[in-house]
Structure formats: C-alpha cells, structure tokens
Length: 223
Image 1 (spheres, rainbow, N blue to C red):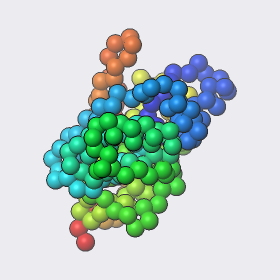
Image 2 (cartoon, rainbow, N blue to C red):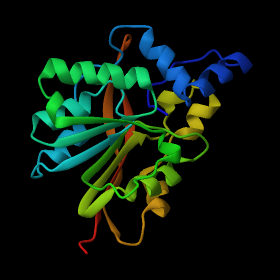
Image 3 (tube, rainbow, N blue to C red):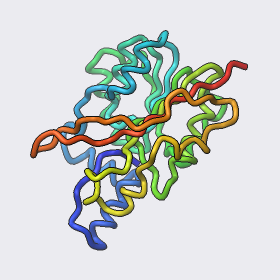
Image 4 (cartoon, one colour):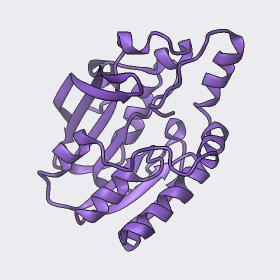
C-alpha cells in the first residue's frame, strides 16, 4: 500500500515478498527493521497545494512515519494521520512529539481499501504514494472522497508507470496508475482541478533519475 519499491530479481519468491508490502504485517516488519525509513521531508505536491490554503482540518491516509502530518501540523492544521501499520503510526507519533506538534495531531489505524469516513470530514484529504493492488486505487479514491468536507480538497499522488520501474514485481507495476484513471472514483459533486503526470527527480545510489508522479487534485462542491 505504499509507493516505496524494491527492485526484485524476479521469480515466485520475489512476487510473494512484493505482495506482502500491500499488507500491514509487511510494513510493520519493515518499519521495525531500521531507525528511519523515509526522509521525513514533506511531499512537494502537498506543500504546493496546502501552502496556498488557510489551515483547517486535514486527513493524511497512508501517512507512514508522518512527514506530511508533521509538516501540516507545523503550518497550523489539525491533522489526522491514518495508516494500516501500527509500527508506522508509533514512529509517526514519536516524530510529532519530537517536532512539538503532538497536540495538533490525531492517529487512526485504518486500511485504505476498507476505509469508511463514518461521518468524519476534513477540509483536506491527502494520500501520497499509497498504492492498492490490481487497480484498487479507483475504489480507494472513492472512499477517500467521502471524507472531504463541502468545499474541501482531495489530493492523491502516486507513481505513474514508467521505464524507471520496469524491474519491479508485477504486482507493484499493476498498482501504479495514471491520474485520469482515478476519475471514475470521484463522486458527482467533485470537480477535478489537476489531473496530470508531473516529472519528479528521484535520488538513487547511482545518481538522480526522473520518474513521473500522477497527481489528482479535486474540489468538493459547497452544499
């Protein structure tokens, strides 16, 4: 359920290992294995979008170690960080404490594939590099949209299929998406604002490489 991928050697064992990364236990094990997995820096698409908004309430689904949550809270947002990994949420909570924003943050353990807003609503719902298997991000988009308040924004960013990822396990390649492929998941009262692929430079041990992000930004109509 996340955008971080490892280059496998092919074969059934690698595919099983890849499939495990769509499940909570796989991420619990991964987060338990090293001190910090991600950079801790906020995602640039989030900064560009939220930086122009008046802070309100936000929900970050697939928050991982909480880099985006901590940044939003530091900007004055009241943020709920949601993830299906208990270990990831524990790390995120520690990072929020260290950043001095814990009192602006709530945590919610939930799987995006079965996400139910349950009458909760937010001015901004965001998800970065969360990937559901077998084209499941259309359904995830539909579920996330239900948590957006009238007049609020939904921002979904993920990896677009590209040559950079040809070595990945098949299940991970199938989980990638183009922004336009998510449009059927938007309810009728949403208007797309941005639907496009944008180039991003990835840092690799062998040097920088360019990959494409799929970016969907949509606004829910005022009631």
